[in-house]
Length: 492
Image (cartoon, rainbow, N blue to C red):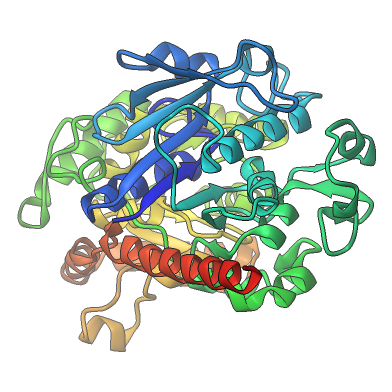
């Protein structure tokens, strides 16, 4: 058994802006089922503090550049047995707005200080400087918000092993040289071999450079980020550290995402009762103001409305096929241009297009259960979870061939239909033409009821639970520990 400190800036259902929150809930649970001793640590945003179940004051936290009055609270992640530690620091986290953005959707001006402090607390826990009576063997850090933690931990002689997971390389936590100076970081870190990245301080680069192992969230994405096209300026750095880079596909929690037990949907179903899925479709059509029809394919989409997600391809495809028998139900928020475009389409074609701005966990589940096709037209997608949820719901994914989408969806053709491996529709070219062609293929297959049902059954038979991925992480933890122990022996 290993003692694992899992450090994250968000965890479902306490705080969520994307897939990181889902992973931070389900992976620790999966590790615990493999008899590991796991603690999750997260910043104490107001929403987190408000939702804690019977929080207990664990200890005060005193340390370098840690504000007075900072403390650790202990609770558990709701509906799990995983211990949760919350860094309660009112100076940095008790404010209206989101984890990273204020109420006006602007980055908090002190984000460098907020998350550097979080990383210092992670390191203090890891090195036994906090009075927790528990010290980890492994510290698993996630995304740029935790990137400085492996760097701080690396300064200690007897230290735990560190692993750093990149969930999306585009978000790097880059700040000015002034921020580096204000944080009083070791001067030698300001170098090409340290945290300096094109004359800026990069939290994500710190995680890559100073951790013992680096992972990202799918095998294909691990290869893509080594190229200039997907490397966001870090492809050279990642190639340099390629020997410690591994792609581990994210799993999903089927206790939350399964149509047979989903509490958010009106009609539960499984492979043997797919007719109940159609009832969910009619129910959603009724509630969203769409025309009630079983025979028109319903395309669903739940995502951030940003350039990465190919939302421009979706808007152009909807316009180009507006006379076709297709309905769309879309949930999301993001760039104002995309929101306005979808609002206009939904207003003009209210029986064919529904757009809900924002995010609703319940509506996301209902869209998965009701849709015939789930669209993910991403320019790049590190892993993606919704296409995996869709498979379990018998909602055939329509995806671009990139990252985790390529690793989880098998394109339909004569061969894959025959060997029963076909699970969806995959297009290669990042364009509205590519998406439109794939959408037309999906509509054509929708009319072939026997083949469609066969593909649904193929999809629902897929198993992307966390068991296999958690086992892979345990292997990487062992590898990191071996490296640290051998290094310490050499040092001694």
